Length: 485
Image 1: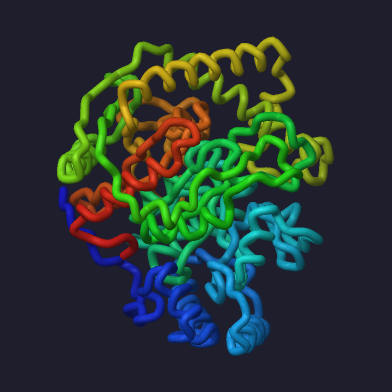
Image 2 (image 1 turned 180 degrees about the horizontal axis):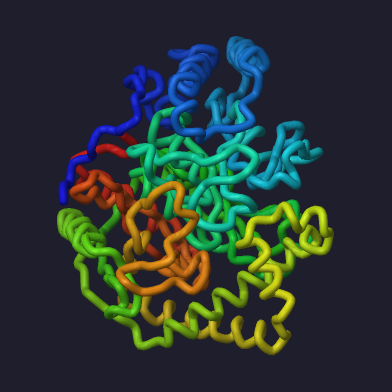
C-alpha cells in the first residue's frame, strides 16, 4: 500500500491555475473582481473540452456561447457593485437525477432521454439564486440505482485515476468532474452511499447531510420519510460547506425539512476540540471486505491522533442482518413504488434496467406489516446510535467494501469470497448512516498498491452536521496529498 496519490492513467493535460483554485477562493476572487466570471467560466469550459471526452463525467453540456453570455451578464452585474451571492459566477453541473428547468434531465433513463423540466429541484433553485452558472449535468446510473455510473443514454463514466475502473455512483459523474478539475464544486445525492462511494473511488469528499437538512422536492409524496438526501461534494471540506450553506434550510414545500442551525463555512473557522471515535471496521467479520481496505482505513484513523481524537474498536450488539433486510424493504417501498408507473407501461418496462425491475417487483410483494416491521427495526437502530453518541463523537467505517472494479462489471457478485444476493448488497456498509438519518462524510483514506483509491466514512449524531464537517476538515490538514488527481 502507498499513501501518496498516484498519477491518473488518463492522458489529461495539467489543470490551469484557475481550475486548481478552491471554490471558496474562486468565489472570493470573483466578488473582489480579481477574476472575471468570463475568465473563470472559460477556464473550466476549456478544461471540460480537454478532459471530459476521456471520462464522460459531464453530460447535456450547454452551448458555450449561451454560457458565456450568462457569464458576461454576471460581470456586468458586478460592475455596478450589485450584490453577489455566495456561489456567484461559479460554473456548476447538476447531478442528472435533479430537475433543471429548461435543461435536459434524463435520470439516466431512455424513458426521459429528451425530458425538459419546467421547474427546478428546490436545491437547484437555491444554487441559481446564489449566482452559480449551470453549464450542464453530471452523469448517473439509471434512476440512480447501483454504484456504477453507466446508462444507455450517455454511456459509462470512467474512474478519474484509471479508465478501466468504475467511477462509483450514483454521483459518479460529479466525483470524476471534481477529481479532474472540471468543476470547482458539485452537488450529489445519497440513499445507499451515492455521495460517499464515488467520492471514495475518486479521492474527493462527499457529504451526506442529516435527514431533513436539505429540502427534497418537488415530490409527489412529501410526508413519507424518505432515506435519500441531497448534499455537496468537493475537493475540500470548505468547498462542500460553501455549497451546503446554500442547499440547506427549511422549505415549506418540504414539510420534513428543518432550519439549519449553522453557517457551515463560517463554522469551520472554529477548530474541532477532538473527541472519541468508535471504529466499527468490518463489524467483527459480519461485513465481507476486500483485503487492504481495513488497513488503509486504520492508517487513516491513526492520523486522528494528531488532531486530539482517540479511537476505540467497537462492534455494537445488534442484529445487522435484520437491519439490512429492513433497509432493503424500505428501499423497495420507496424506490420500487416510485418506479411502478414506468413498470406498468409495457413499452417503458422494456426500457428499465434489471435492477429497477427488481425493485418494483419486490415492492409489489410487500405487505403493510412488513413495512411497519422494517420501520420499527430502523427505529431500534436509531436508539442504538443515540446511545453510542452518548459515549462517542464519531463512528468510523470504510466507505466501501470493495476497491473500484472493472467498469464493464455492473456490480460485484462476490466480495471476499462471499456471494452477493442483490445488486446493492456489496454497498451494505453505506446503510448504517442512512437508516439512522445521520450526517456522514467520505474522507480520502489513500490508495492500494495498484493505485486504487479508497475512503473512510465519518458518521455523526443526527443534526450534528457541523461537528462532522469540523472533524473532516481537521483530518484534511493531516493528509500528505490533496483531493483529486
